[in-house]
Length: 472
Image (cartoon, rainbow, N blue to C red; front, side, top):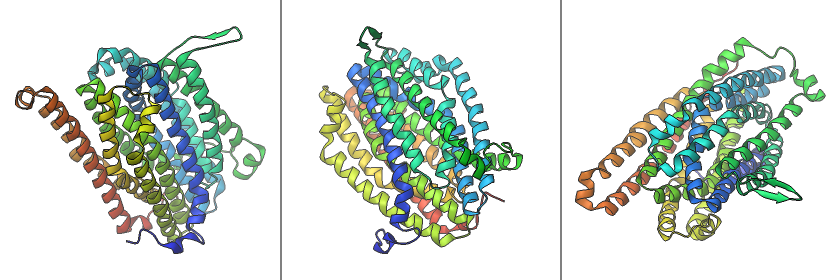
């Protein structure tokens, strides 16, 4: 396998061509990562407990929405393949089916707040975190339809490789999210107008408000006169045939996403049960990793779009070349992020205003673990999205379920219960048994990501995706 082929720089599907699609998605993903990072950094400055509560609560909310997010987001593959097949009206119909599913998903998310207290009590975290976790989760879930509808509408541009629109909207969201969160978390007095400090609830309200602004931009752009004329965005919005196929191909994508997040959520919950210091350090490490992870999502989306267009146009060589170009870019990016995490971790710690030496020590080691699986996570994202761009969602789902539970979630639970047991405490002492428990969980996380990335790479190399399609 040639990782770096300099002939990739030019021509159709080359690095220059791919960069035009990938760069705006990477910037948009960076914007999302900045939102998460700054929210948690502000909460860390407000209260370390608020930051620790926001991570599992936000992750749980996202996990609950993932089944719908995976389905509505998969409309981008339909749009890409219809674009490659030169059927623009059906591309718009695919977006409408995603919108209908997004509205249904938003209603389900709102209903989950009914049992949120029981859910977070079951997690067993420190009681000082419970009320904050519930508050943050409930607000995000009340507005669950906002990110889902935005994801549905964004596929209209991503599937056609018009990714500049997505970048612009996400930049608007980021530029609003940061000041809104600052005002609502810490409070503000300005010319007689007083905004009370809302803490972790303010972070959730600010995130919801910024998201609504982005959704409004997508709605307006989708119904502009030129768009209505070319894509018939108001004609025959419901298509039972496309709806069925979107559900058929999208549900495996959604199930894989939700179970992937569920396994990761188990990992986070178990870390939180060890101690508040461990959860705080993990939140810092994972928040920093989100700055690396989110741009890789952009590269994965670009691979999915270009494979979809290649499949729709029956131009497999273009799809393969585009994936190789994405691989070059994502490996270069991963190496850069490893240098940052290993070379200047103090900058990250300063942003979170960390003062506890134990938390800093834990977070430093955790950042090294994230570097360990960074490259394999890049392959996971790149090749998983590439085969899904053709319609190979069932394999990705089953591979994700098998590896996620057999090599990650279940071993993590076994390690936690073993090394937090009375036997472990009597044998190693309390502090030593906690250390063994923490690093066992992180080693299992690394191994799982390595196996997943390798599996998706081998599936791509097998080539079955070349004979697949999601459109008629």
